[in-house]
Image (cartoon, rainbow, N blue to C red; front, side, top):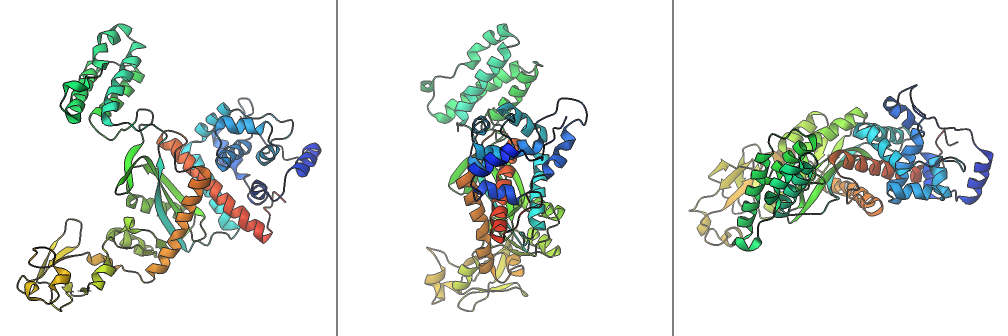
Length: 479
């Protein structure tokens, strides 16, 4: 049964808290200017209206989770701090004589709400920012950032060996005799018996597949689940950790792989996050763009412009955004400025390409990445006085890749849009520097998504409180 928060002020608490707590502290500004009373309404569906003992008030538990992210504390640490930290108790609405929730209560509360409810809480904060006039909403600035998994990184060889041991330990709980018979399959192959790493890995994988085949008939839930997970490891289906099977290898830069997740975020030009989704690290940014746009639509936000980096360069996406009245400012993967500096000009109407010497390309062929590869005459290029600028090595003629749709959807003002886009880099810098979002606090896609959503709620609340405090405004309930 849901517990209700007593909003009747206690004289003793009011006197103690007012004398000991600085009113200009950032947490006090958030408490005064951001209203979290919507929490009880949003989470009521997770509690029975009449049966059971009254829980801790949901708003109190939400504020404790908020405090965790704000101060970079674990469940255990925040509960310990609440026992003696007067500022934290006051922010969370815990009186001098009130009990403090333990870490297990926080774990159960987080699990009970799930990602869906935390998304609704995030949307309510965005709605409040919009209602207070803090959200401009003309721009949608989108980007993705990596969240490194909270696991030890292991290579495929170590995973192949570790999985067999885990399977045998799980089997021993149900059939110790069979586990002892299969014990030789759990032993690692001697490294010295193989010429190189690839041969050793192949032998370990073969041993793992043999163990899987011998356990095909086992019906125990834990054994079957671990067997399927190990099968994905030895068949190289992307699983890179037994403790966090949802984490995947991905790239944010070409030469910097990471194991974990990606947070895809949209903010407006003021830096208030308005939409978010979290995916495994191997998923690209572009496929998430339209779902993020749909989130904005659900929240009643209709941006006029969208700014993103060249990772979102896609003709179909540009057309889809244009159809909804959104002007996309997305740099092309093809360096148009470099092409123009070299003196090449493309006629969008005729579909022709002209070189600096005034010669037209004699033909073109479709390119595997879209667009066309234009080629010039082998008679003209060797005789051209500008060949030293165009041709490299022993090339007999110039070939130029052109993506025609880039010219068709090329928006003016791209430089200004890229300056606007920097706001999301500042958002990522804030949440990673001050709230440790660079690394996952938990394991599993849903739990990491909850972490990211809560972190953005904290970042939004900080911005809202600072701007409202500067205006001298106070939320109605705080007043």
